[in-house]
Image 1 (cartoon, rainbow, N blue to C red):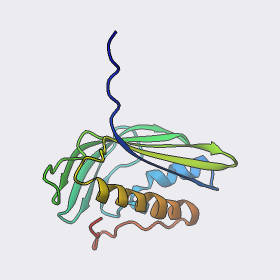
Image 2: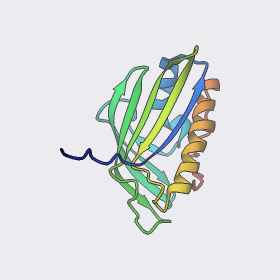
Image 3: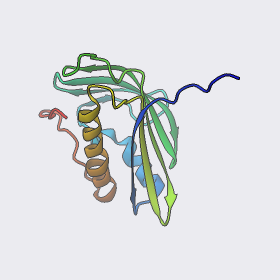
Length: 158
């Protein structure tokens, strides 16, 4: 009998909003509206690749690998660079998943960053930043149409 492969460690988050799954789906794909205005490339179709830059502190290239309207979005981190960690590529080859669906009259949003390991040097900073972008910025974009992304000309280090 072969042992099952070890499950990768992940960062997870979840919250609910009153808006319909399709509205939430479109907000998630509006990455410039909740993460950073300094996103280059497509963000909403399978095969799209986009880059994120936060001055010299963080750069990454992400590929959209799955898009199911009103249900889920999946990204793969192809390249990553942090200037504040020993392993500059900690996020490389990790996967970011958004799952959504109706629950108790609301839309529940589940977020998982597969491979963002608590043992990583960036874990505290990265999970705190992701928490802000999800719970504050993405939630605001969904509810009001205006998120709190990093501004292109003054992207603050997260």
